[in-house]
Length: 249
Image (tube, rainbow, N blue to C red; front, side, top):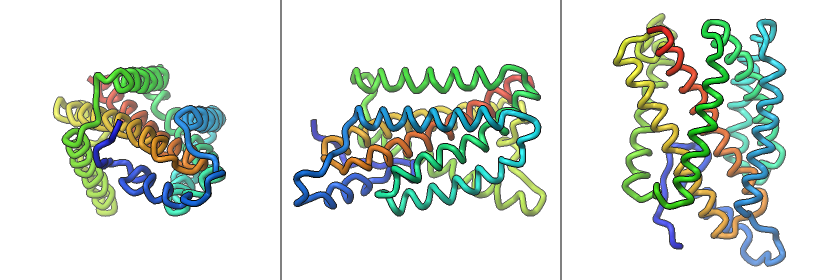
């Protein structure tokens, strides 16, 4: 099956990722190639490391790991994007660092809203499983218009995050992004962001299939797993905020 040209809001999985790496293996006939099964296995390993480190910091005494995990994870993420061949090493490190941050963040949310973490994890898994099933069965197709729409929406959300970050230096904020804001508009925006984050999973699935078809190098399994982790972490955090807003009502 031929794929349409693809776009995504995920910074890890862009339109050149698999094409450029596939070109790197021309003339190397004996090189192992990326497979969908291999990518699934690597994603499972990454998730295990993330959950294990998150469990370790799910405590009131571990909140100092939040900046360590966030900043460290961001640095490792950029290294992974620019040095894809290092992904078998950098992606496990990224998963551990992000887990350190997510564990403490989850504890803070759970302390204020009992049971919210279990709900958020359950919803994230349910969305992942249902979208994967819908994609594999052909119910949802990553058409060009679908990708353009998701790309535009993701870009707009990213700009909103940047504006909020800049405003924070001046003691201001965008109130609709505040987890304590339980207005209908704020809840609606959170729901919209959750939908867009979920839609990015569909495009990620399409990218992975594209990479396997193009015969990308074996290490691209880890890189593809990295792309999925980025989307899943974003989705989980947005579900946490959405649930917190609904609880406040």
